[in-house]
Image 1: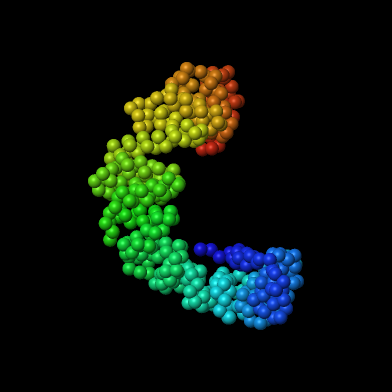
Image 2 (image 1 turned 45 degrees about the horizontal axis):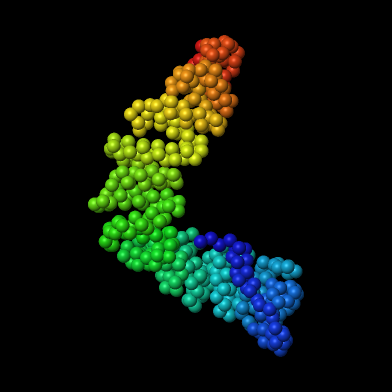
Length: 443
């Protein structure tokens, strides 16, 4: 939860812009001192609903109602002064005074806003104690917004001393009012044992209706609970359904949890290949724990390592077929090294390097040059080698600069040229390329 104050005030002000067209009896009632009519008329002029927008008339009617201790008018008038409006100059001091009037009269919106303002120190000097006090006044009157805010503040422990028990208590109050954010947070705190004794069954109780509504965070956490066997009987089928529903929407965390499920599960849900497949999917989302687990599995088992490589190859192949230049290069490397295959396939490597090289990828251009120079997988052609080395070298690829320098030095595929040889070797050496430094010293 974040509180950029101007945004919060603006958002709350917009809620009040719903005045309907004002009949003449509302005007008449306002003239006789009816505060509700004055308030409605003020909103109508402020937003131009049913009447021409007129800041002076809006302020006049809102002031008349506010001066009669009408809290909603005091609050709206305070917002207008704090934010400004068409034809209304900002006056934060006057605005804050009006919001204080409304808050002291018991207006929940005003109390919530003051709590936020004091906690953030925007428009006033930062005062966490005062901010919390205003939020508590609203929370004790049943404001789920204030209860959520207090839960956040006490859980975070940045603006006030951390108090997880108080945090849980306030979140629970909001959750009991059907606040979705609070319901999820209560479940999460039960799951983690924050501010309350750890209880996965109680967490699942709060999460289930949210998961049924498609709340992804709830589906993810409930999916974990369903296979972790901590106070809740394992339900692998349900866990897979929940986690998969989240994973296919692009969640690396959900793919990682599916990997854990198949690595730690029982019966048909214990499958190392499935686990590795899901961990590999999680890698697409830079999931650190998935990468670490794959490394551990590969080190522990040659078969697992081979399968992990094949999954990595398939991931790259899928992206390469869609035109991803880095994936095309990676597929070429797999084929060139024979990684995950019985032996290298230079012809296939050349094909993929060529795709990436045509898109300007320097490493692929260099590798393609080496294949043309050696004749592996392609017809040997020093002219083609020179072409691809040069393209990569011009992109500051040090190995390509070194290769180009040695070709000019030795007169291979090109007329011998010591000056150009030195120039390219120097460029490679300047990047720290050790073989180029050695060759340069011997030139």
